Amino acid sequence: QVQLVESGGGLVQAGGSLRLSCAASGRIFGPNVMGWYRQAPGNQRELVASLPSGGNTDYADSAKGRFTISRDNAKNAVYLQMNSLKPEDTAVYYCYLSAASFNYWGQGTQVTVSS
Image (cartoon, rainbow, N blue to C red; front, top):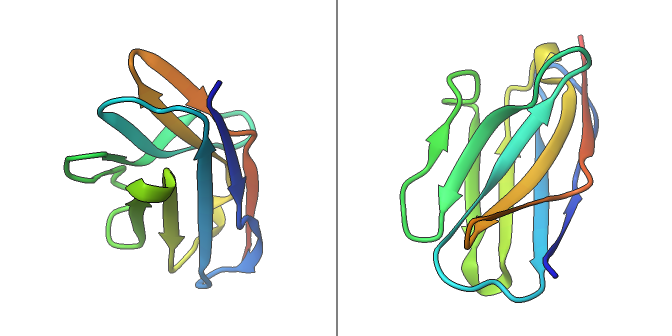
């Protein structure tokens, strides 16, 4: 059973930075994709950034130039460095892992950006 545990959310002023971390435990076989989604109240969950184990990064337009995704394959961990945060970035951020046709999700971490 794969489990994902996120950390690093919190309250920050507009223009500030936060770094989210996510560690996956359990057996993970083969190529996989790790990344981040977010969901604001009243909105659908949306992709923020993703990074395959052997591929290139993909970012939502809203994240380009401000957010950076990275991963440590040895630790099965993925990170999201968020800079120049805006109030509209306020949401619950979910880590995910897609492997062997299964999708796994973390419990979510709240990010609140005050104006």
